[in-house]
Length: 281
Image 1: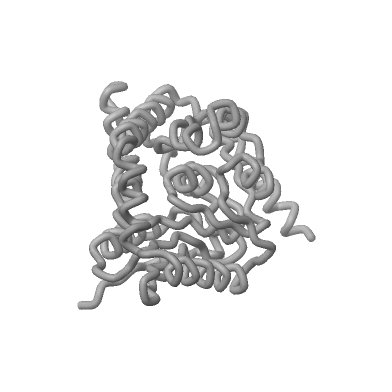
Image 2: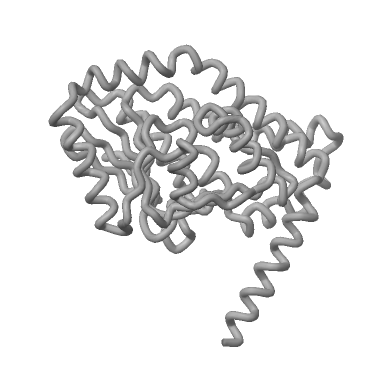
């Protein structure tokens, strides 16, 4: 049976592997099989004998809206009542967040040059999990980022507190992750988080990404680029993985404390009111 990758579009074009999140109606939020399929595709490309670049991008106007707030609220409803004590409750949340460890490890340990091609905006996990880990970040001018973790009673997810500080500096990372400030593509380019920003969207942006990478392959030796990545990442690999473990632990504690519950409930109420208002139009 041929491998199946639901909720992503997985293609290989010569020396470029492309993983495209494909839940555009849900703004490529982390539902369905999107994350397991992404992990599976990363494994394939990591072992592929010919590819040099691995591209992560999205279908539609958003790169990713991160977690599905409605899904989280629904899953949490009444779940805490089943736990015998706080330790049992924390173990339950750690089990739920375990997939994130393998996704981040798959990116941190990825042997190919990891290209993040932000076709549009990203929020929450969509904004936090990928930019600091990617080797090169290419972005549409529409690709703003925002991580409202503090507003939801959460923490910077999956090691982003460290990876963002490594990419844009401690104070800028604090401002972005602690205060949940929305940063434009130009601000992120100026801060050193983005390598290139192009005035393009949709198919035009995706074509620019492939053309740019093909140009690099014409000029540069693939193995040399992969070795550059390996030499740079080797000294910081363990620290990044430890940061992911620490973030998962801190996130589980926040849920044990019920910190996000009221904030998620307020967000759900806000979404419902907006939905009702739109239905009246």
